[in-house]
Amino acid sequence: MGNIFKWIICMVCLITNINGFSQSPLDGSWYSNGTVVIQGSTNSYLGELKLKQKGKTISGEFNYYFRDSLFSTKIDGYFDLNSRYVIINPFPVILHSTVNTKNGVDCSMTGEFMLRMSRVGSYLAGKFVAEDKYKYTCPEIAFDFEKNTNPVSPIDEAKQATIAATETITQTDTLAHVGDPIAALITKQFEERPKDVFKDLIVESKTIDLEFVDNGAIDYDSISVFFNNNLVLKETMLTHIPIKLRLIVDDSLAVNEISMFANNEGLIPPNTATLTVTDGDNKTDIDMTSSLHRTATLRLLRRKK
Image (cartoon, rainbow, N blue to C red):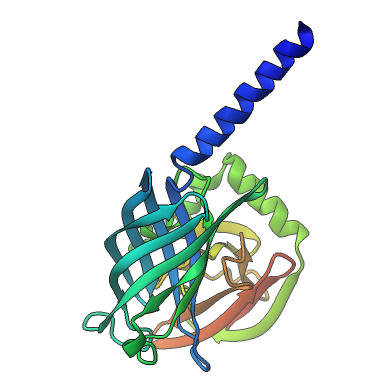
């Protein structure tokens, strides 16, 4: 009797798993960095699929960052349960060679993906392709989408970071970090990670302004900023909108240090940014690279007028 009962329970679990898969394995948010399949191209698309499955049909939207702009378009398509093949019907995607996204040209592209599921995650591997007559003008864009298990999607995080970056953060704002457990953890990690002091910059002003932007494709890089080993910016995503900081140079120190701590390495390691330092009428652009092993650090030497 006990064995029969166990067998029934196993069958119920098996049927439940099968039904669970067959009902809506595509539901949710999927994200990836898209690579243009053409020699010499360095442009990429930071993409997110938001899908809703109903039987064999799918619907939703495709959101993506390209250069300095966010695009969103409605999509629909077909899912074959037996082959796990996903087709997304033709929809517009901005041309990979576009320089100005405000007046760029669109390509009509179809999505072709294969669903792969395992214990470590779910993936949609494939590409967007144009019609044969446009395949040289609009080359394939390869994606390997991973299902997002976080309640907030990476694209939504990028939107929030863009909004947050419109205001200048001053040193007095850093008092908000006192007693913050996340800030304490970041500070501990910062103290354990070696610094990579790569440049000395002479400044004359007592007050300096900083602007951090992602210097490539927006790929979910997040940074924290330390000034003289004190946390002044906590875990903020890099986008094309500058993260603004205003700092006061400490003249009691021989050198002042600005450290860009990598909270992650995004989809395209390592964590890179362009830092613009405004010292009175002078502006200096500096490329900074941090990893999960070293923290890029800029030293400031003040020359008094």
